Amino acid sequence: MHAVAMTLVVAAAMLMMVSCDHKPVMPHAYFAHLSHDGWQRTMPLTFRPEYDDSAAAYDITLAVRHDNSYRFRNLSLVVDIFAEDSTVNRQTVDMALADEYGNWTGGGFGALYQDQMTIARAASPADARSVVIWQAMPGCDTLQGLVNVGIIVAPK
Image (cartoon, rainbow, N blue to C red):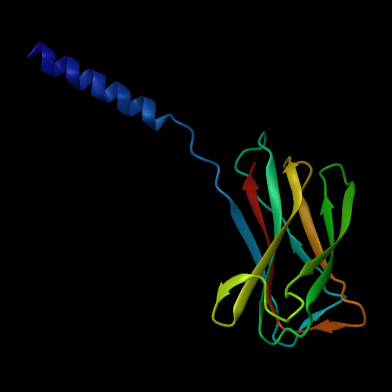
C-alpha cells in the first residue's frame, strides 16, 4: 500500500512540474488583404505585432502574396519599423518575384504565390512596436495583382 501511495505522489509531482513548464514562443503572422482595385501608393499598411515574451529577440519577415495578374518582375516597398522610443528604422525593400524568364519565384499552389524576406533580425519588442509598409513602385500610383502583404514575427 505504501508503494502505491508513493507512486501517486511522485506522479503528481511530475505532473505539476510539467504544468509549470514554459509554453514555447510561437511565430505570429499579420496580413492585410488588398483590394482587387489595387494598392494605392498613398495608403500604407500598418501592423502592430504582439510579442509572447518581452525579453526575447525576434526576426521579422515581410511576406507578399500575389496572383498571376501581377504584371511586374519585382516589387519595391518602403518599410518603416517604429521603436518604442519613437525612432524609425526606414528601409527600401526590393523583392524579385519572378526570374529573368518570367517564372514566379515564390512558393504556393494554383495561381497564388508567396515571397518573403527578413527585414529585421534579433529585434526586441521595444525595437519594433509597429511596422508600416508603403508601396513604392516607380511610375505606379495603384499597384494591382497583390493579394496580401504582411509580416511574420518569429522568435530568434
